[in-house]
Length: 111
Image 1 (spheres, one colour):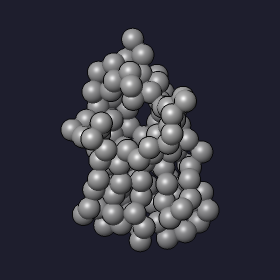
Image 2: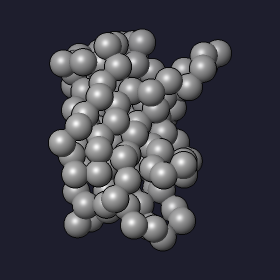
Image 3: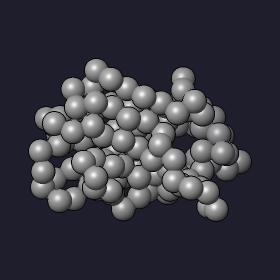
């Protein structure tokens, strides 16, 4: 079982990033997929979640209208499109599927 995140980096406020999480070793398409983040000194928090077929989606209030979660079950991949990024979005972002966690990818938003 493996979840491999990519797409993090350094961006200025107002910029965009697209995170990807590629799953392998299990049947990705039948499970909810989630993105979490953890900022320094803070607890890990749920950012967005998508159902197996994509019909049910949840966003934390702090990212509504700016982030979009999506998935491609043919590619065993879940995405997080992040627009209008703010300094407070700085964190390590993790994907989670069926109890498995990825290794995390750093997102830094700084002038």
